[in-house]
Each structure stands twice: as structure tokens, then as C-alpha cells.
Length: 629
Image 1 (cartoon, rainbow, N blue to C red):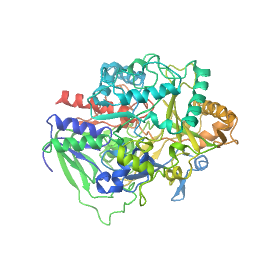
Image 2: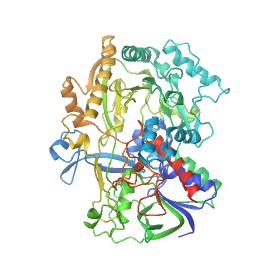
Image 3: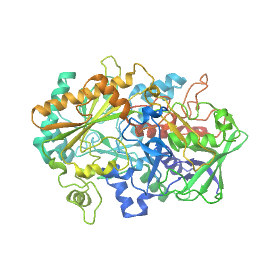
Image 4: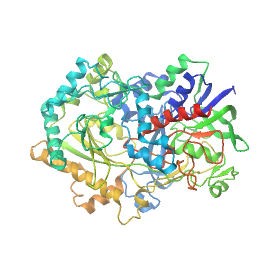
């Protein structure tokens, strides 16, 4: 099929921007996406993509959902203790939502755009001896991809920005000038970033003001300062914070442009329209294996058929073997199918642990035991409370598409592109160290009006029923958990087996990750206790009074924690590491002409949120590929 310089498998955070960047600089390439374009398929699909507040609903929308069912633990008894388990084939599984659509998981994520800490990049540089991974160089990639709208470029402050930032300053009784803090930001990139409108909090100024003041007081007790940074205060992406790694309150940057989600999908479609001769996007094409001449990648075999992959809720087993097509690439094949599907595709192509491949009759091309190993994720848990009265901010919100008429919040979004539907629902974020001895903060805690207890089928509709609930989500960065992705069959449409092996597969006697999350829960409870004394909170629903001591909290967290940033299954490493799948130029060891550009490349999970580091790696990969060419 065709005559291409490059073939890229996967249109998400890694493959999408890479394909667009290569195409607009003259390369001819084929982009294979196993899903369709749910946003273009229907008005409902468009709303699920564009309306930021629908990010939860979109994970359960059949038009783009890919449903994986994974294990947190090998032990059946331990796994069964999680109330979110789903019974399938007589065993307990955890639902892990992914997206099979143009843009991959960037089409349904929470749009949080936060750069990782410098140490995350410096670790890769020190590990491999490749100085191009040092943070001072990697930071330039964020500046290149970002089109920042919430911090004005120097000298271009607007009245709207002034008003919004002034409102926040008043809530904290501060007098600093919040403008012209452009350090580390870009203003001409493909990804527009903004912040949830701070004026939203003024819809219920008294209640939200009391909430924020309670947060401020507890932070002041712990840190001596209630807000993030020495000068910037509010912006976790300001490069001036990188040296000191401060703790405190931060509003969370989002990939939202004039009230709508934006991401790789939009970038791809713009470039495809501008350079149709360079970029061919083939949807509903499931890659089945990489094609090789000896050990050089020369193309990809694929099946062009919608709803083929069994993570798709509409999937049906093919009655007969579907026809397979092939496409070839003159220069390189790049896999960007994500932490589950990239190792699966490598193994189907004969690259992976030789012993495991032999179980399915797959001939070994390159024996790489690290393929599918080192699976990492973050741990998350929530503290959800019942407030004494509803939040005025959301009292007219159904958090659902028009049925049949739009609610007032939806009308506001449709007419003005603002309001609560133009946000992901999170009002504030807190960055904290779980221990003063840590060099970098490891907890990101964000608060949102609504009820969230983790991912389980039907979770996204709970927001509609509770307008007096407030949830603090506690996210643990830099976890030590390592699991595995392995084949369940040699059929490319079958999902792989995924076992995260939480907390050392439940075997660690003393676990620093577990203790860190306990610290986060205790910190949130301290904030809530002040609000309860003020009469704002009536009760805690999660974890609830049955979990009060540290040991009880450890039990709760071990049983009920979850994650949604799967990564590290084809990791970069030094030549001396037999488990390293990639070299520092993202090339698959033992092969030529084959790279990986997605969440699987990291040796350790970076930062707080996985998508921004992937974007930065994608920009770096663009430079590496052009250098090689």
C-alpha cells in the first residue's frame, strides 16, 4: 500500500503529534489508527470530545471506549477485596478505560497539562549517558508544543486575564501582580493550554471562599505558605519553580481552547488538510505485526475492519480470518500504540521474551525479555464528603448531553464557551511532599465538586445525582510498582493480559508508596475537619469512619486504590541492562528502522500526569528522526 517514508501505529499523545510534525516538514507518512474518529461520527461523539466536563462520560461512550479488564493483584483473595471488581469468566477484574479513536486517550483524558519535574528527565540522561535528555534541553520541547493562553506573553496582558487573576488574588487576600510570568511557557505551539475560569468560584463566593481559606490555613500550618512558588504562586508549569520544587496550592492547566478540548486529533486534522499529499490517516486499521527484512523494520501488516479489537465494546469475533494488508516504509516504522498495545505488537512480531513467545508458536526474531515488563502506574484514592448545602456552581448542571434540551450550563457552554462545562471539574490542586526528606513533591491533590470513588462501570453518571458532594483526589507520583503485560493468544484482536501487581503484588511488609498515600489522606482530612467545625461538611463518605487509624487506611488503600497512567513497558535503558528495550534514541534494540514513541518508553513513570511527558518525548522523537534521516 502506497509509498511512505514512515509508518506510525497509533494516533495518541506520542504518534499523533509526531505524524503531524513529520508531515508538515515534507515527509510522506501513513498513520494507522485502530479506531475511528468518534468526534466526527455524530453530534453525540462531537460533544463527548469537545465538552471538557464530559471527560468522565467519554470513557464510557461506546463510540470511542476501549475497555480493558486488568488485575491489580495476582492473588484472587486480595483482588476480590476491591469493591470495584467486575466478574468476567469466573474471575475478578478491574475495568481500565482506554480510548480507541483518533487522538487515542487524549480524546477522553482530563486534559491536565503539567510538566514533569527536572529529576524525571535527568534520571534518563544519567541512566543512559545521553545528555540530550537533561531537563534544560527537554524543557524546550514543552515550550515548542505549547500555545499558552492562561499566562500572557510578556507585554500582552489582557483585561480578561487581569480580571481573572485579580479575582483569585482577592480570595487569598494577596496583592501581588500575577501577570507576565512567561518563564518556561510557549505561545506558538500546536497545543493550547488554559486554566479553568477562576471566576467560576465566584458563582458561590461564600462557600468556595470558605473552602479555599480552609485549605490555605492548613497549608500555612504545614508549609508556612499557602500557594505554590516564590513569585508565580499559581502555575506548576513555570520554569522558575524547577530548582526549589515548592509545595502548595496551584490551579491546574488544561488543554482547553476557547472552552473546547484540543489535542493531537485537532493537530492531525489541520495538517492533513494543509498537506494532504504528505499525511495519510487510515482509521479502523488494526496493526497485526511489524514486517522485517532480517532485523530491519520495513513495514506493517494490518487488518482494515472496524470494531475488530476485543477491547471495543462493539467487537465481535471474526467468523473467518479477515484479510490482511501490508504497507511499507522507506525509512522507519514507529510504534505509538501505548503501554498495552505496543508491547503486544512487538511480541506478535517476534520481539520479546523468547520463552513467552514460544508458548503461542511465535518465532523469536529478537529475544528482549524487557518487552511488557516494568509496567508502572500511579496510585490514586479519594476522600469524598457531604456538604451541608448544594454548590451553586453546579446547581443547574446535569453533567450530561442535551436530553432533549440543554441545561443552563450546557447553554452557557454552547453560547459563550465558558462556565463549568468548559472545565474538567477540578477547582484547585495542591502539590505536596509526603515526607520532608523527599527532594521532590510526590503528591498531587485536587479538589472537585462531585462524587468520585474510582473507575467502575457506571461511575460517570454519579455526578448528576450529587450536588452537595466534594471529592479530593490524591495522586501518588513516582511509584515503585512494577507489573507486566503479556500475550493471551497469538491473535492480534485479543487483548493482552495486564497485571499491575500493586504494592509489590501485596507482599511488601513496609511500603513507602502506601505510607505516602496514607499521608495524603490524613492531610485532606485535616482540611476537612476545619470545614466540618465551620458547619460546611456534615459527613465523610469515603473512606468513611471505619477507616480512621493509619493501619486501617493502609488496608483501605491497598484494597481500593487505582490508576490510569499505564506506562514503562518498553523502557529506555543503558546497553548494560538486559531488560532495556530501547536505547536513548528510542530505537528498539536488536533491530533497525524501528522506534517507539509513547508512554511505554519511560524507565520510571514521570511527573504527576503522563500525557505532557509523552508530548515532550514526541517532540524529541521528531528531532531524532530528522537527524537520522
